[in-house]
Length: 136
Image (cartoon, rainbow, N blue to C red):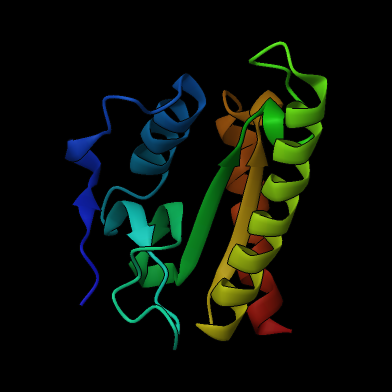
């Protein structure tokens, strides 16, 4: 069984974007089970320790990733442009793997870009849009 952290156990090292989206989700879905750092189990990774999604709403089968700037452009944290580019490509590959795992698990997945992290109206709209696809 995957190890879970509840909303209350917000990571100390979580980004401000991650924390803000968690608060929005808690307000939008107060009756639902909201998990942080939810493990993504695979055939090769039975305990789910290798991959995690930022947030997971169990009742909706919805995985939510909060995508900071480093998901969109290389960020040169160490004054090493080659490493920044390499890290960026690794991030893209990791995002792709996580999307595929979510699909295999039968989950919806929503990526929330950092510039929308303080827009509960848009986040709610995006979630409802994803869930409405189930009815089609």
